[in-house]
Image (cartoon, rainbow, N blue to C red; front, side, top):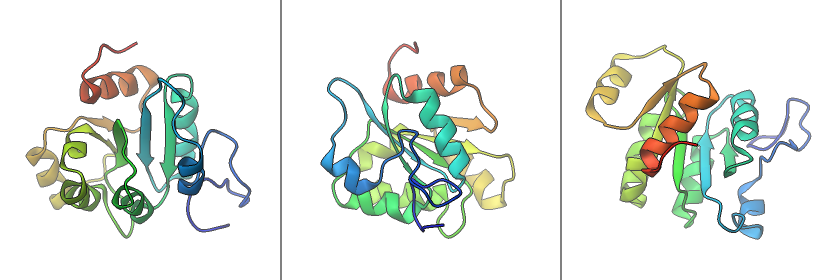
Length: 156
């Protein structure tokens, strides 16, 4: 399997609306649609969330938080960020701290996705931030409600 994002289990390009950062740069968000970022080390979550949101939002998926940071450091901006809290190498907490230094307004538009397995650090972190969080598994209604909260709009 190729390293990075936008690939299915066989290593082939995913055809679920998941794009690489280079593709995003070449094809900006559709006119009038908000552009969201999803960061989750589980590619299946990326495919499911992309399917759920594809009629309403343009979604970029990264399975590696470092790639997401690189995109933001390179100037990519997103209306909201959906981020897994517990990932290997770089956690959602780490991503939050880095994004705070790169694009401070974006940290208020992060929705954390959690699988329920928390470290003491994660528990303390979640108590210290006001960001919404979704427990996996979540449904479309909960996802849309959390997005509406950070986007300050009425959920569809």
